[in-house]
Image 1 (spheres, helix red, strand yellow):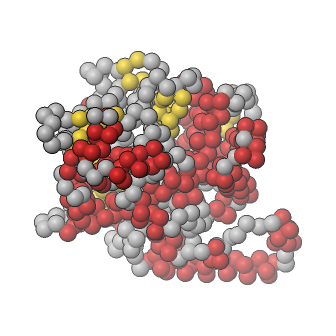
Image 2 (cartoon, one colour):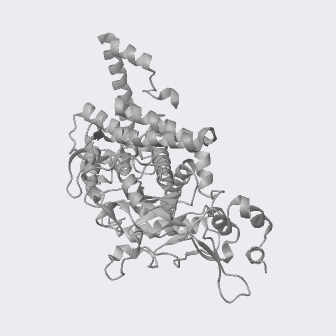
Image 3 (cartoon, helix red, strand yellow):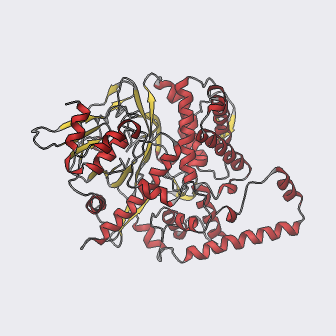
Length: 65
Length: 497
């Protein structure tokens, strides 16, 4: 799974590199990140309970510790 | 040490269903489908839920009925071959882990508890006439109710309780920066809109106390050691969130163990006392940017992450001074991960989205807000919060993230599966679990500190005390258990008769 971690530990060098990167690179990175988030959202859309409002309303618990 | 988790429960299509009945159905279905012979009952003899660590007993008359946890109400209550207790506590099914000696094992049996609950709910659904019951590893319904995920740590009795309160409270106020499970909604009843780090923070109202169901305290004083009370106390921690992410649980119990070891050792001389810990606990939780400043009694102002860094700094020095290069691998690993997580949380919390529950959940929620233009009051965001904790692999959003390779694991499925059945080998849970597995016909009851045998030809039940948590290990009794074919053999050899 490590290979799919989108935000691996950065060494200080790479961090500096990001800070000084040209604007376009940053935008590209943001787009890549957005599409990455969109992928998982699409996947999750398929499993979310269908009626969010009813589901949330009816999730009622009795007291616990 | 060990964890105990109360699971949220919902009956599909029946929001008014009685949760005690549903919880019992879950526990009983698991017992019927897995336990071979007679079902050992829980032995309540040594329980004392009203004993206070500050040195007195609360009277039964003034106690809230929910505090009388030593009364056998006939609710389902079984002991498993892995040494765990599976039962109905209040209105929730609960899995109490067997005793373990290290953080990774705590994670392992905590995760095994999720799988036991999953099997239990599926077994319940297979019974004719039973509805579908779904379980959630979370801590609130967002309608004013909270249920717990407790941790227990064995400590030396000689440690002054006042020292525990003094040095542990600031740690607990800030531990949520990595141990929080994330929550949509702020406040107890009729929550305001927004996201916060912790499921539980808003339900804590006092600094120290005995209660667990009302006026919840940051430091709980229940003094029920389940071990020799002259030597030990059991620190009962009720503040934490139920975590799904393995790294969150690992760091939660790992860092807490280290802080407790320092307190036992008298190592902490720095005073990190927080001014108004209850409101500080909430303030930290309410700020996912982690910039909120906590005021210490000495006037310093630190963020939650910086307060954790103070403890980390102490722990690194403590381990170095006391153990040096002899420090075990896991202790070093906890220190390294703790440091790495704190560094990244300080830089940008989002860097921890593959490790920590609250960040993973927050990232998902922000994604939905961005893509669909949702406000924090949108039912869909509340749904995501709840469904993150659904323990079914096909529905639970935590599980979907794991499957997509977006959450770091510490354990394999195989190790967790084994822990559903096998006890840890290095505590008394080994003796309890193996007895349940091998002599189930003859075990009438058991508890943390006893196994009670019903032996052929004996009129009365025979109680074997297991008062020392570190005896009854595989090393200690493995050979004896292997070579005793019957419970009678075992009992005779244990008692020398």
